[in-house]
Length: 260
Image (cartoon, rainbow, N blue to C red; front, side, top):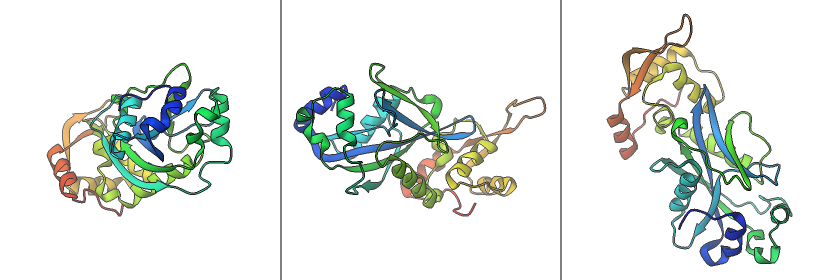
C-alpha cells in the first residue's frame, strides 16, 4: 500500500482497496519542553481535530496500516508501537458527522457511501522522539500539530475516549513500558524523565524516591556531564543502557516499579 492519497481519491476508491468497516487510529506521543504531547491533525474545513489514522488495505496487516500512518505523519520507521484496544460502540460517531465531513470536503455521498457505514477502529499508541519527527500534512486541505496531553482541543467522534483509554492502558502497564527510553534523547536529566511519568500518572512524584528507584533498577547510568540550564542550575545528565532495554523488550521483563 502506497502513501495515502488526498481524501477525495481515497474515499472514491475505498471499496476497491480497503477492508470495509474497519480502521486504525494512532495515539502518537512525544515529549518536549517538559510536557507530554500528542500529535493531532484535522481538515481545514472542520473545527474538530482528529487522531492520525486510516483504513486497512486489503493487502495489509493491521499493524502495517498503523506503521504506514506513522510514517506518513512523522517520517519515522521502526518506532515503538502497540495495539491496545478496539473501539466499536454503535454511536461512536455522531449521527451525520461523517456526512457533514463529506459535504465540507465537496465529496458526493453516493461516491463514498461506504464511509458512512459503521466502523470499528483498532487503537494503537506509539512513543517517538519528538525531535526526530517531521510532522507532515497536505497544506491544501489539512493541518497537523502537537498538543499538550492536558490541553487537547475538541476532537472528532470518540477520539478523546481513545486517547484516555491509551493513557489508562499505559498507566496500568507502566512497569513494562520503556517510556523514557522511547521518548527521551540519548542524554537526559532526571527531572525530564520524572515529568514523563508524572504526565502519565496524572500526579506529582517524590523527586528523591523517583531518582533512587530509577537508578536502583539498573537500566540507567549517570554520566560525568551536566547541562547548563540557567545561572545556577546545571542538572546531571544520564543515559539509558540500551542493551538492557532491548533485552527487557524481547523477554517482557519489568523495567520499572508500578509503585512510584
